[in-house]
Length: 246
Image 1 (tube, helix red, strand yellow):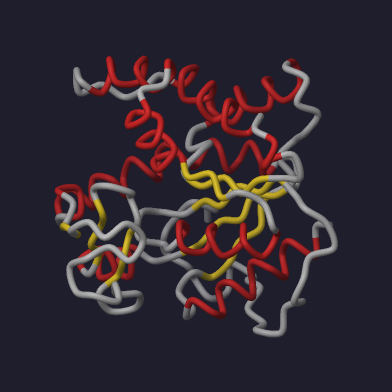
Image 2: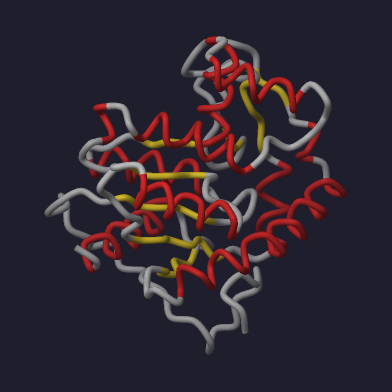
């Protein structure tokens, strides 16, 4: 069975699930957190970044920040978004590299939402080799969650249009109903969190992610984590995998 299938037969995959993970890492790393929509990768990547003491670079959040700030890269991306087009891989990679070059990323970074495809993964590796960044991807952590679980989670999801923070009404609700804890703006249900759209997004995720995962798997960088567990158990498993690769 392929690593990117959302269903998880009990006999075919081995997961890390202990809650007794070390309290502190020995060193920092460049980590990619991967998972289908609704797997909780944003929440877990944020916790992992704080534990490691390195920035959490979520491509969607960074895009929104660049657009709001009107930076040259953000304005370039806006020209594509205004036409309903995807931002090209080279521009996406340049935006991520611009963020990684900042001093706070010198010790490492946790990437979330990028790379998403094989061309992006290759472009990132090439940029690391040729642009004097002196780094590489050390570990790819893949959250494995069934399609049924994804759909149930996403139906309870609400988001902030201003800062991009995502909440789950059942597992991680905002402190004040309908209001973002981070920036105080109103929360809403995203149009792409509807069932038909979600199923299409899952299909695209499987198609796009499979070649990327196989690329990293060939280099021995992929670790699977059972994303069906509660959030604390998932985080403990992620920490275990980080320590094991240091």
